Image 1: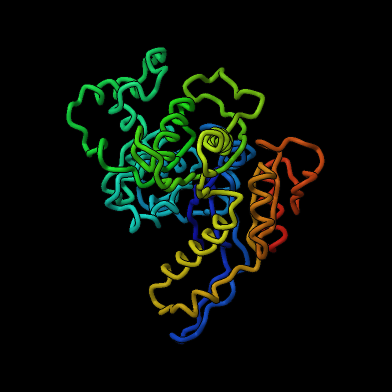
Image 2 (image 1 turned 180 degrees about the vertical axis):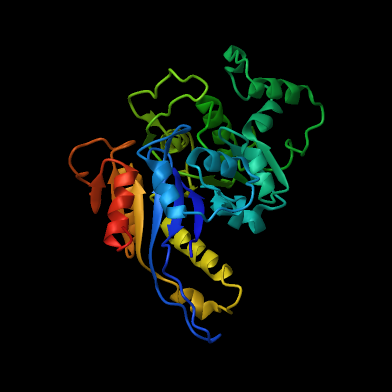
Length: 378
């Protein structure tokens, strides 16, 4: 029986449980046998580069998925992965790197919060259940001259058009001029670093209300902390290859914000960063798989004590970034086994010096072949 989910960390992960490891005895109180192994794939740089599958990834994943199938995916991410990889992935199997933010709902559900990053950061938080959320684009548009160089940003984008419409609105959706921002969330890589750093500094050093006197710093959360990543091919332009040098990621933005904030404020910036290499990502991945395993056995009653016993003999982490994927797996400890591919950030002939993987291969197809042979499923 196969179990799978997607954990989008920094960058994303795909998680698979081994194919034939779970059998239940007929007695209701009997415990399941121990699962043999699971596999965590980094997506960007291992499975995909942009929207292009790499390293024999479709064949490798279809080999693991077999004919397991599923319903028609509803979310855009699930649909995208299904189409690109040739396997059916349900929305319930897709978990973003900012998924830990869901755990903060009780704390900030009815508080004013801001969210920034490419895509639709405010929509992400709204779907998590947060009631009073604004994108940083929207929030900044209510304050005249908060971005001192905005007049020079002649962007012909939908984002710029939306900012113009927001600024024409005489009545903000929330009382942004008196309600303090209680938390700021960096959902994905910010687009306008200069504006975002300026406005976040205004919010964070004022206690949540720009132009006010210093107050207690609102909470700040990052969905990832990757310093660099391998740039992607542009799907809209087939002849445009990825830029050959690595690009700065969310971790670089965090460093820039922190450095500036600490120079202009009397207290150091306080923040929480999720995503790899944070061991939380790996522990959470194990928890997700255990939950899926338990939920898939309708004919058996599994209690808390059984959930604890649903351990893996080995969990394989296949990634292309030694500082993120391999370091994270090493910090997580048993039962993680790290495999480094030469398909993304890492391109060296020898193993990484500072964070050496347990195994180095050229492609994800080679990694899967090694795992299946090692586990006796070749």
